[in-house]
Structure formats: C-alpha cells, structure tokens
Image (cartoon, rainbow, N blue to C red; front, top):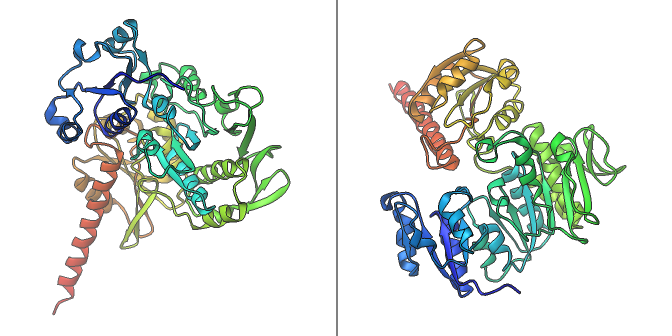
Amino acid sequence: MYPALGNVTIVGMGRTALALAKLVLLKGGAPFVTEAAGRETVAPFCRELDRMGVPFECGGHSAQAFKGAKFVVPSPGVPPDIEPIRSAHGAGAEVLGELELAWRYCPAKILAVTGTNGKTTTTELVRNLVAACGHTVVLAGNNDVPFSAAVMAEPPPEFIVLEVSSYQLETVREFRPWIAAVLNITPDHLARHASMEKYAEVKARIFARQRPGDIAVINADDERTRELTPPDNVALWTFSLETRQANGLWLDRDTIRAGSTPVAGAADVHLPGRHNLQNALAALTIMRAGRFDWGSTVEALRRFQGVEHRIEYVCDIAGVRFYNDSKSTNIDSLRAALDSFEAPVVLIAGGRGKGADYRTLRAAVQAHVKAMVLIGEDAPQLAEAFSDLVHTQRAGAMDDAVACAMAQARAGDVVLLSPACASFDMYRDFAHRGRVFKEAVTRHAETRRAKRRETAQP
C-alpha cells in the first residue's frame, strides 16, 4: 500500500524515537536519529540505539543527517518548521510525524482522543471500559507507550486507544481513526501554535480524514469544539453536562441519558470534580457510539478510580488530605482541580509557565485557596497575581514546599499540588514532579509518626 521506507531521519531522541526506529527497522527501512542535546543528556537512549545497531548523532542536527532521507520524522516536542527539516523537505523528503507513520502499519481499530485537558483520564477510562467488554486493547500515544510500540504488539490488539496531542496532529496527513473525540479547546501551547484559531485548526485535524463508517465525538459544552465540523457522512455524537443531546449522552440532574433513555448515573463516576464527570461522559459516548456492551461498560465505570497524577489521593496526615495533580500544566486544569474541592485548599503551584494570564484564576483562588506555596520559574508571576488575595510564600525543593504547605494546613484542609505550569524547569516531566511530591509527602508522614512514637515512649 505504501512505498518502501528507505532512509528515515528521526529528529529528537526519546522513547518515541526508539520505538519508531524499531518499527522502521521492522518494515525494512534505515533509521538515523539526530538529537540537539549532548550525549550525556540522552545517554540511556544512546545505549539502546547502539544495542539496536541504529546510527545516531548528538549535539546538533548536521546536514549529513538529512542527506538522502526519504522521510523526516520530528519527535512531538520538535517543531516541524526548524531549518534542518525545512531544508530536507525542500530537497524532496516527506515530513511526517510518528503518529502518521505508525498509523500506516496499524492493524487495530483506533479510538483517538484529543483536547487541551482531560485526555489522559478519558483515554485510560476508555481503555478500561473496552477491556471490560472482553476486547484486547492497548493504550498509547501521548503517554508512556508510543504509538509505534503499540503497532508492533504481538499478538496485535483489536483496539488501540490513542491519547493525541496538538503537536502530534501538526504532521498528520492520512491518519484516520475509527472514533475520534475532541474534549475541549482552551488556551495552551500558544507559543507553538501562535493563536487560538490555529490551535483549534490543528485539533480539528483528528477528524480530517474520517470517512463514512467513522465516528466523531464532540463536547457540546465547549464553545470551540462546537464549531468543529467533521467531514460529511461521518456520524456525529455529542456529550453535554448542560443540555439535552439528540445523538449523544447528557446529564439530567443525577442521571446520564442517551436521548430520553437513562443509561447510567452520575453516582457511577467515582472521580472528584465536574470536569471528571465530563471526561466520563466523553468516554461513555465513545463506548455508546462504538456499540460496545453497555452492561459491561457501566460496571467497569463504577470500578474506575482514576489515574496517577490527576487529582490523585496520596494520604491523610493529621486530618489533612494530600492530592497529587501534577498533570495540571495549564490554568484551566488548575481551575478544574480547585473546583473539585469544598474544603479549604493549601495550593502548591508554579513551574515553567506558558504565557497564560494567571489573573483569570483570581475568582477560583479566592473561593477555594487559603494559602499558596509557589515553586519554579513562574513563582514571581503567581505571587503578583494572587498575593493580595491569599498568603503566598516561596519554596525551593519539593520537600520545602510540602513542609510549608503542612505548616499552613489544619485538620479538614486539603494540600493540593496543581502547578498550572510545565515541569521542565525542575523535573524531567510532570510524572517525575508528581512522584517527587508523593515521596516528599510520604517522608513527612513517616517523620511525624516517628516523632509521635518517641513522644509516646515512657
């Protein structure tokens, strides 16, 4: 169906690049990986490429790396319009992403989900629901499992649930999911996409190649997703927390309905916050549209307890509950997290900001936050936005941040890590940041228990 791969230059070194290099080898191509960072920064990936026999370079993108390339595949974090890639394209190379290349060899039906917020929870829930219906399924994409790795799974799964980012959608050409869902579109990654209009256009590419027999799922409550128009003759399903939907699922007080038919209850969703109820509606709409077994779907929904780093309960210390929401990397995800709690919140926030206006969160902070502990590069901007509303203080390492938060909290309060920022100023990624937070909380809990034991000794 597709021409032989030939020489494939992969730009950027990481998990996705390794999986893609393996796929290229499997399909008879010749991969070469080029990385801007020095070798010491990406040493584990270099060792794996050496083991695979895949040539690579570090410390910059040389002209030689692109010479004779039939395909150039930038990793999601690499802008596809940087100079070496533009020159290679001018010399005749096809520029496409890992999502596009892996799709060309995918034997499974694809359930793809994009959106500014909620992708990870929704895709993890969909994976659980599909598996509960008795199907083989793999979760991949913008998470720990590259799409290329899922495509090579043996035996091949019936379904692949894909979490898809805007960066991945920039370079798709023929990518065609069976079911494609857009959860929401709010300001994010504007340094890359330049404007909300262009950002929305990129998100809409998830539908672009769908055909009759495919399904588009759209959030009817989101102004920008409502404006999206899938191709003609693609079945359109919608979901809403606010209004009745003719072809989709909606919330009627405490009942989830398909049209007028009750199909589940809000109480079946055991995740905190209205935003998670919306994520569950999206997942259920995907399942309903795909005609999966509904009894098994609802039973699995009742068992689902959420995913790591998404308003994840950590522990209780002296009546103070600690939650890890490290996946909060923009202001809308922080707003959703704050709206999930009725108890006073001591908030740990900050990191590498994305240029958003923090002051749009002032009403949410005033309503929910009793104190803020600020970390990372954007701590001064956060302090400027909120210090007249709540007590704020700076902290360095996460241990210090947790200690400061514990000093401010009282029994009945919540300590919440929800940074509203990227993590790269202090951590490898949001998952690393979340793990460090949980480890710090655990250490403080153990220290408190040890002191109590010493006090109790005669």
